[in-house]
Length: 256
Image 1 (cartoon, one colour):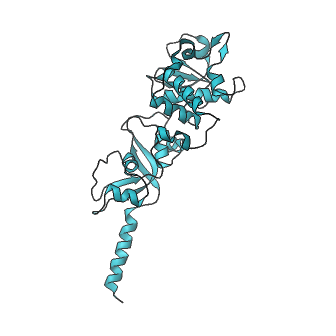
Image 2 (cartoon, one colour; image 1 turned 180 degrees about the horizontal axis):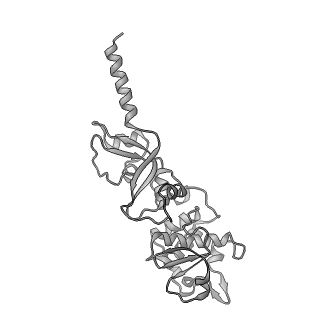
Image 3 (spheres, helix red, strand yellow; image 1 turned 45 degrees about the horizontal axis):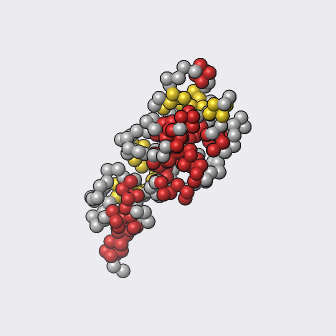
């Protein structure tokens, strides 16, 4: 037996095993426009698990923040390219780059990469993702996104998701109507519950961020953890301020 050849084969096998590890805590640097839902979609981590593993007090994150994610990692070899690695792990080059914020078009030997197990979240994936928490149509999604846009256009992304979540939470509350449309167009004492319906801002087209926020809420994301009211922090309404505060994000206050 050629022992030298055997040793070479064993060394190569060991090296191959060392290049990629099993799923464990890897690092991910937050980019502008990210949300825990989008990051979770990329790595197939739940929002709750990301909050817990990073000791977050809310789902609000900020650019350049470093988060722990559960992901395989791979050590780049001399003959590697992004294309070859993406083919090996059956992900697109764009998805691989999205999972590694420090990676441009070039990689180098010894560099450690996160290997995403999910996909990039974008508007084309809206109707092809996880099960919604309430039934909805494309027109419901559009209406909810327009409400988010009108109420929280200049607010943090967390506030946008919070606005949509309040609508969803009302659907689950027996004191309110049971559909998205009926919630948004509900009247109380001849007045609409939501100001954008009254002033017409609800009719303005929604931004991509507002669409994503609406989608996240429809699929279970709720940074307010059950709030059924929200208002601007400049309001003087004592009844609103008397309710238990669930979340403050930007200028928006969410209450139970």
